[in-house]
Amino acid sequence: MKRLVLLLLAIGVCCSVSAKIVLPRVLGSNMVLQQNTEVELWGKAEAGKRVTVEVSWLKSKLKAEADSNGDWSVRVQTPKGSFEKYSITFSDGEEVRLENVMVGDVWVCAGQSNMEMKMSGFDSQPVENSLSYIMNAGQMADHIRMFEVMNHRSYMKPMWDCVGGDWLVASSETVSWISATAYFFAYNLAKQLPYPIGFIAADWGGSRVESWMPMSALEDILTKEQIEHKHTLHNIKPTDLYCGMIAPINRFKARGFIWYQGEANLGYQSLDYQGDIDHYDIMLKRMVEQWREDWGDKENQMPFYYVMIAPFYYCNSFEDTTLPLFIECQQRALDIIPNSGMAATTDLGEATCIHPAKKFEVGERLAALALAQTYGLKGYQPNAPMYESHEVKDGKMMVKMKNAPYGLTPRYGAEVTGFEVAGADRVFHKAQATINGKVVTVWSEEVKEPVAVRYCFHNVPDGGNLKNMYGIPAMPFRTDRWNDIK
Image (cartoon, rainbow, N blue to C red; front, side, top):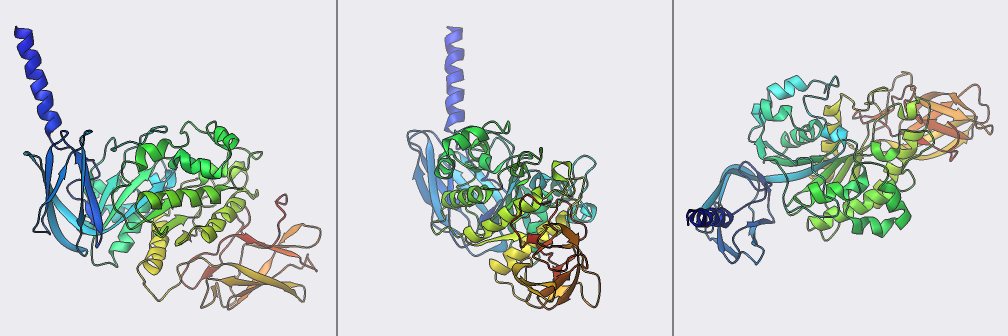
């Protein structure tokens, strides 16, 4: 009899616990909701229970009923972004209350280790000037809110919720352990915008782009053999991070995405393996389409800004061209992904460290793209100078660059570095260069009849100081298609 009573009590306790509303972790106190749109609020309750939702910016209550699986959701219109604090109350007879909720813009910040790198850095790999920003992070408490998706893999099975994570208010303690690139991106946005910025960081060091996509998306663009091969390349399998880290957050309305990934797909471990330079752009395009669809973007237009992977001695070689060949693939993605932009890092790499310390510049350049292209800020050119055309004149290469409306630097006779030219023998020689507006004149005394020019076309270039007037560095480029010439 005693055992029966204890069993009934245990059952009663379980039922009581299960009856209480459960919210996904991405819905919490301190969060930022996307402004001027219809957002979804969802959770779990006892099957058949009626759930009432009260948001402090509306007078009327919202109601839903939990289905047979206990799932319920409501949609609510959000106001214009501001620094006002709101509350949200959920009740099925027992209340769950969220406090200090704000409304502004939300960005999803994803990628591998260079996105993952915290403000406090990695072991023996610092983030430059992090101390100042960490010490003063409290000043951004009402301007920046952060959510980090805890690392979790789920092969082919989309997760309903994250395995951990809470919305955090910017402070010296919280900012120290958040993505440096994401924070600097949000910081530069928050300095310009009259409402808070919330960001969701979802990152995993060493991850490949196919891990961030569902199988259905991969099957759209890859052969069965290619998919099988990708299962052998890394312990993080295709679909693992999409199902484990993206699926739990993709119902949370967002403004756009930033992305810092590619090193793993470059295939830097062996000179014999050129990675995915032939189809990374296609995979990235398909991933963006999938994410936009998941976030309810039927027009495939949510902003997507990503980072050019930085110089590094890939394949243990400074002179090899593995990196610039991959950057060409990243550049091709610009042409096939609508409303996208790429932040250049030509001047930020560290030859023997794959995690550059200059993360502020990365975040700033991503923010510059967003502020210009998404928010309409004018007065500067955020895009990197890129090759447009060339002609040979009097034994010199005349290279015209785009994204340099007011010309290029360095000027006034300063040495321009990073260029090489070659003749019909396909042997490249270090070249001299001068600037006249958007045109760079390149020549070498050793090449009387030039047929090709390259700029920063090595894993670790010798020099490379070509920039637009706002300090945005030029992308590596070449005029030849000699893939076998280093």
